[in-house]
Length: 338
Image (cartoon, rainbow, N blue to C red; front, side):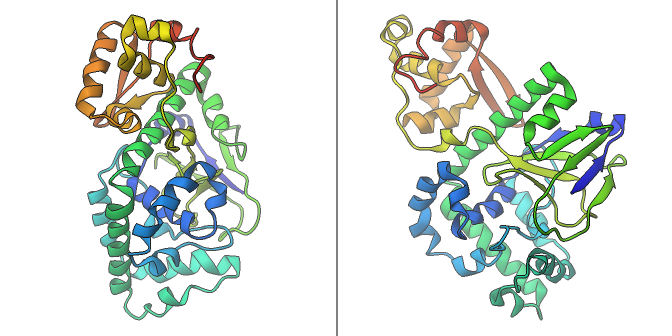
């Protein structure tokens, strides 16, 4: 197990972020025999397979350990901001000290009794070239498979999760926040403990935060909670995001007829979809319409005080206000999947 010791100031400074580079790297688990862990994502990624197989997929899949689906720490650096730009994240990856590459790969595979894959080990004589090849392959994978349609919806899920955690913190305090993230995470006497089964690259250890700021990042590709393989890394916990079922392609549930007559069908449908926060882009994708059309309806619903909106970085997310929730309440159990 790993324990993070947090003083009062450390607890107050604990924050959330998401990382498109982290999601790009961790999504490789879908191609290496671990897709069964994420049933809500399997259909979507099955549809991406033809594009994936046109890439350097042998290099990409070699980056994930088969036994525990670990990935090297240097591929998932702690996000520098709450919603980093992936171009900057790729630049940071390319600027990694090549001397860290071999150590990072060995730390990923050897504690599991797995050899470092030949595709990686054969290139150790030129770690700078190997690092560049990995970054090139990841960037092409991001551009071809993830960025066009998957990432806008995944980002909405991650932002919604962070919004949910903020509400839990406001309503229940730090204990409710931290223990609600995962059953593997416990909080007692200023100590946040991650319980792990199986092998780990380092012995059980206690890590003082000491002003370095603990960062919590949700992921679509984590089925529990984990941290960096090296105990010397900046404190960073990755956990499974809520709401992955919203990534499944399916028609929006029909709004009740009474609500449609009151608001019109498009606005009624939007309102019933916003029991959980969502962005204009995500809603447009789910409905198969333009963001401009969705934005117009959202503005009307917000002006009528049926929606509230919050900003996360550059993105605005909408959800029911108490009035909107009350208006939808009679309908969500009839003809709806909410």
